[in-house]
Length: 347
Image (cartoon, rainbow, N blue to C red; front, side):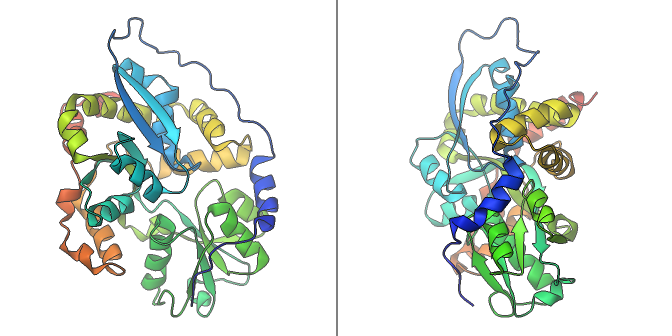
């Protein structure tokens, strides 16, 4: 079965209205814990994220709560649309210092000749869900039908392929895979009857349920370690700016703690960056990415990237030559963990 290239934008309207209600984002209150005497010198860091999903919450929180400034950093936080692959190109070009992106982008970059490593993974599981139309009761019912993903090589692509394989179905043989471009477009494709199911990330589960679709599988329940989202840098930047990265990681783990301890503020941050005031969507986002899938100590691990290498190798055999330990550098998180810095944030 072949990929579709796009879904008509007119089909997106219903899902978008349900999710955002066309209201402007709320403003974020000034953080109450700004240091009284911030450092005179602040290293400048260019960071970016790629989506409006609350998978980006740790970076958003560190910025909005003033945590980077507290650790002597002046950090710009920008969105680069088009997925981690496009943002990775900006990182490799040297126009970006730190990318809040997905593990697959690291492997793709290495195969393209770039030396990019993950220094933290805040979401080490498949924090996405497979939603289906009403007549699909079991995953096996998808045989002969199609599943929507956002793009080839993305987290949704991996999740769909892994889930189908676990249930004895062959992707693109027993079940078709349709590229839609985004979560909203996936919902539109389901609504139009082009696909029987779709891989969806919170808060897009909210409009999906309102349209009568139901959760077929929580992919995190499969128990697979996977580098969903974290901090990615070029190795030469790491070598030249170790102190900057130590400070950045301190702010990042503090942001994770703040997310888990301050739900109202975390929801306001999500509201601002996801451009929605829909309470159900905010609750769903926080439950998923503020609690259920978020780890306190964001270690990048060999197991996470071994899983990823095996997946990429199915479409690019050269990936089998990669060693997962060369794709990560866990020393910054390890140092914070071993000195008790992370534990103290929760006392």
